[in-house]
Picture 1 (cartoon, helix red, strand yellow):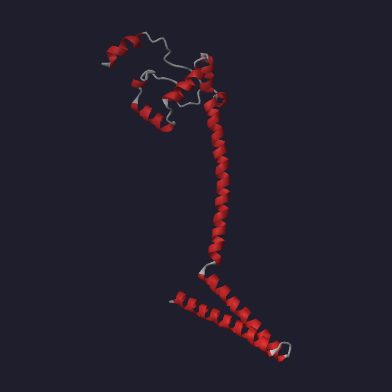
Picture 2 (picture 1 turned 90 degrees about the horizontal axis):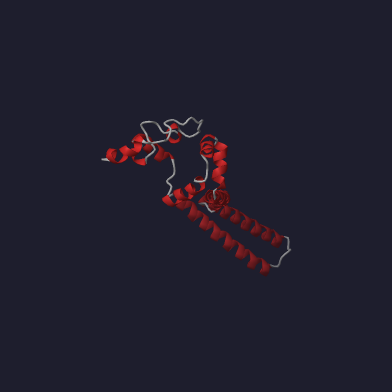
Length: 197
């Protein structure tokens, strides 16, 4: 069916069968072979599926936009784009949509780096907070608080013995310190027991 339709056009094909360029593209992209004329319907399925997997999908509108930039190029300029990677890169960067996309990628990359740094800082802070509120750390802080209260009550007792403080003041302060000490001691005992059992 396609031979009848395409047959008359293929006979008068003025295109050369082989293009001799030193292209950096894969051979299936840069030079058509006799078994692969340039029509999309006659492309070898293996080569087509291989190329489709390697390249990003381009919408018809994007393709039309790129063709607008290519249509005024001479054959020599097009061959240069195929064979010279630097010329190809310069051409791509001269296209507004590509330049815009490139700028967006740069912005995203810098934002990603900034976000990654922030994430790392927050992760480190989270680890420090979790460490400071771990059961073992809390028990240690409670033990330090108990020791400090015990030392304060002992200092107060020494002041009473040295007659540096009045009895009424001593009783009031000493009672408060000992109540705090025993509350912390009971809390410490309960927490230690619950961690073990």
